[in-house]
Amino acid sequence: MRVSIRNHAHSARSRALRSAFTILLGLICASCGETYRPVAQPIQGLQPNPAPAHIVSSINSDGVGDNHRDRGSVSSINVSGDSLRGELRAGMVPVHAGSTASGSLLYIANSGDDTVSVSNVSSPTGSVTISLPASPSATITQATGNGSTASYTYTGGTGLFAAGDRVYVSGCTTNGFNGAFTITAASANSFSVSNSSTTVSESESFGAQAKIPNAVFVNSAENASVFVAGYGTDALYVINANTQVVTAVVPVDSHPVAVAQAPAAQKVYVANQGNSASGGSVSVVDTVSNTVAKTICLGGGTAPSCSTGPVPVWAVARADSGQVYVLDENGTVYAIDTASDSVVASSASGGVGANFMFYDRIFNRLYVTSHFTNPVTNTSSNSLSIFDVSSSTPSPSSLTPITIPAASGSPCAASAVVPTSVTVLGDGSRAYVASYQLPQSPTAGTGTVCTQLSVIDTGSETLSKTIALSQVSDTSAQTGCGTVGFRVFAASSGGGSNSNFKVFVSQCDAGTVAVVDTYPANGKPENTYTGLSLETPLSTFPALSSGIPPTQNPMFLVAGP
Image: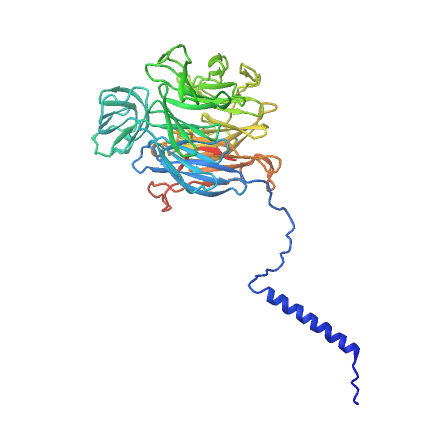
């Protein structure tokens, strides 16, 4: 009998190898169709901030009256990356915008074509257009200039225009007749404006048009409805934010220009500029019935014949809906009690030439910018005024008004500074005033527009710095900068404990939005402008010497969530 003798050590190794092979084969089979990537090695250094992204929207116009004008646009800016998220087409001459309370929907007031554009902020490349009732318009048949006044004859109706109306003129053969003007005189089939750009007389073709701007202001403090001021139709448009349909057209007083909503009071307050026959007023609209509950004449009298004098320019509501504040161009701040719908205080003044008002809900303050040039002495004042509105009567700060100086080294330093807007950081710590200078003498650089941003410490209520931004050519004759919308406008981005605030400044003539870091960054101190400006989309104007058309003109900014 043959006996088989086994080597046990060798047998153990063989079993181990067979087991390992079986496991490897199983892994290979199981991994079929899978893709395995190399393990990434961590990069040492500063990592991206995990804070939520913030958005700022720039509202851009592509001409107002120029023969090359076209629809405007909206640029959606990614704050953390200082980059564009997307762009969308708006309507003609967009001048203002506002969002729902959640910040998810943006509504753009297209003043030149009776529409409102709606965009979903999370998808900034598409929009819905809402049509509004048309504002007065006519076909111009004759235009005549004498070097100081331009007169227009029109068809399509009689008595369509009145002295004091704002009007857009477009399509005239001589481009100097086109633009945005205030009517100085009017008759049945003609009107006149101040215009020193041309001395010719010409018959116009069918394309020449005069139109009263329509949608000029958007506001909402809720998510169900949005409210739009219709300057040319003397109406407040109520838009359903779910269906994007106009659900009510509320007749208000003459020429509404600003809207403030007091949601807790279920009311909307519409500031009306008035006309040559009636002064400024505020229409109180009940948002349940969408009817006017009361009209407040700011200068006295009884609507629709309010006493002339006050000309409102802006309106805001206090965070608790207890008061609404209306600013007129003489600087008077009217405090309206929303329970009685009456003016309870009107002694606070931001100075003659007031043009903008910002409400800081953190510290319950109003910030008012103003500019006025005395035609007799040719001296000017330019300031920021601050008011405490925590009580029933606005109380001016003892340290204001604060004079806004020219930036150090500005080539326009000898020219008047024109503040046009102010914004406050979300923590209330600093205010930023956007302003510009427009030299009028050869030695100061005629035709140059200088923009700047002034920093105000809100704790001490003192000016800490003025930052020079851009110096570019004056484009107002072609673009309407300075006559429509804001020549410069400032908006603070969102921010907080996990992200930093930035201030964005729209520069109409430059066609860009400047970015200012309010915190130390990249080795630079806080409140530094490094030259970073974001360009708006290209316009339809003729190409520059570079062969590329100029960019569109930013008129307004909206800070998103």
